[in-house]
Length: 349
Ligand SMILES: [Zn+2]
Image 1 (cartoon, rainbow, N blue to C red):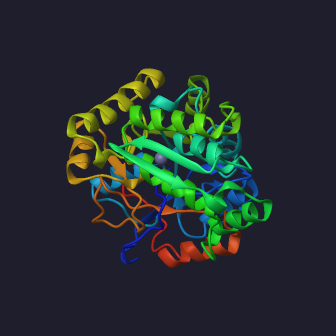
Image 2 (image 1 turned 45 degrees about the vertical axis):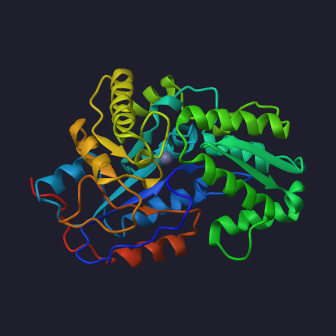
Image 3 (image 1 turned 120 degrees about the vertical axis):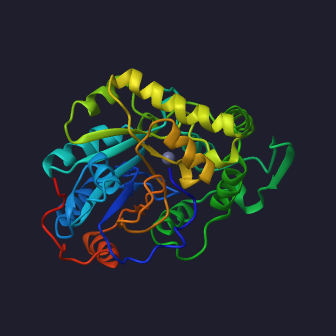
């Protein structure tokens, strides 16, 4: 996942030499508070439209060209964060159909795990039940947090529908239940993995959640990673071990997350893992230096912007794509890129 907030401080679309797109999931979800899912039909439309704007390219090739100062034309790079199982079942067949290369960033500790990604587990606990108890008390980050639920005790169908629409266009007000979800999410996100899982367990007990992971919300298994690897169109990148916000961790813990995710993936794949993406787009200058020191050739941020010859290889801008129809997708790309690539030669060789 990238960030709970809208992208800000966008870089002006001048001297565009390419654009990196962020997706997470290809599927249809009942509840999608962060707007992570794009339906397969819409994703196919996106892939169809992409070529109007440039050439879909692998991230490694694009990063190499940028490093050698040979990034010409307009490269379009597809990236997927987190490694949801639908990337294999729904996205990969469409990569093949449209001959579109993509990079999937995996949080190695979630590969084959029995638990959902933590933000999904929290969603299951707080946004699936119709009724919740009246007060949530949670010990986390050295404090006691108390939420009186009030109207959020009940979550009615019309509120669910409104919240779902909100995640697409951010208009109107969220339900009290969704506000609770976001407030608890804000407390849990900066915690380290051990404290976060403990907090999730406590909230689960409080809510009476039955506790079984939804298969649709799991990360891929080691066998499924190998199935992705078998496609010539797919590159796999690292996204830490526990999907923690790196800049909130001590330096040694950051290094461990970065190094271990690379080692875990390389051991599984038997090939070098060259690209990294910062969870939630959070990193400091030191984080970027650690990623470079650990042998990666690039790192993707979530700051919206175009690729230019001056782009920082360890803070590559990316534009988040939602479940948009063809018109909105095309308008978004047009906002960033001129519709006619300046050159059909994407790379000097
Ligand atoms: Zn992520």
